[in-house]
Amino acid sequence: MNKIKIRDRIFEKFLGEEEILRKVREIARKIEDENRGKDIIFLSILNGAYVFTADLLRNINLNVKVSFMKMSSYSGDKSTGEIRRLIGLNEDLRNLTVIVLEDIIDTGLTLEGVIDDIKARGATDIKVAALLLKPDAYKGSRRIDYLGFEIPSDFVIGYGLDWDGFGRNLRSVYRIVK
Ligand code: 5GP
Image (cartoon, rainbow, N blue to C red; front, side, top):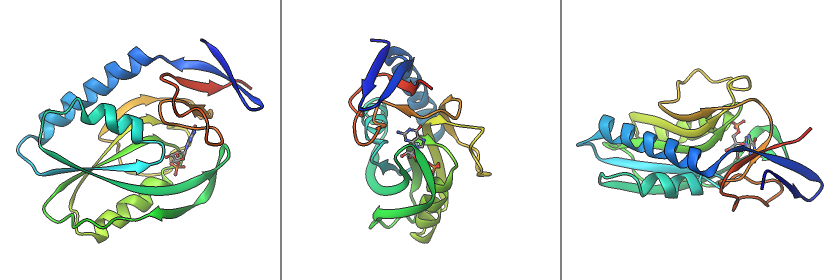
């Protein structure tokens, strides 16, 4: 299906399932190559990153730990400019390589909050993996170590990303039709 309707909005297919999975496998290979022999923890940012996290992890052949944080900066289809910590972090991150997993980086505000928190937990070796980045909206200075796709600043759903709570189960990524 190329077009779908959720509530009052129409979305069209933008990145197909196969294309996404190919990219996830590529990211997994790169993470393996660059982090072999380290003690790694993946830190997945809920809600949206759970699908990316599950697919990426099952393609990684290293000993890794996984933990989750829940942050919220979006209300409807806009960034509020303010992040809220809904589930914090309890792990001691000293002596671990932390790889933050984000579904999508828009302004980069969420990522900045996450990085502050993990530094406060003692992490010194920090990397970031994101499936999607909106370069025109990104205000951060950190380079994304493992990136899937750069996309325009349109609102997207699917593959874990929602519109008003719906659409996370879609296997492809869809973008809003204006
Ligand atoms: P940032 O803090 O970088 O502005 O926004 C990051 C968070 O906002 C993402 O983790 C995601 O939850 C949400 N977000 C940003 N862009 C989109 C989008 O196009 N679609 C959806 N569904 N969520 C988005």
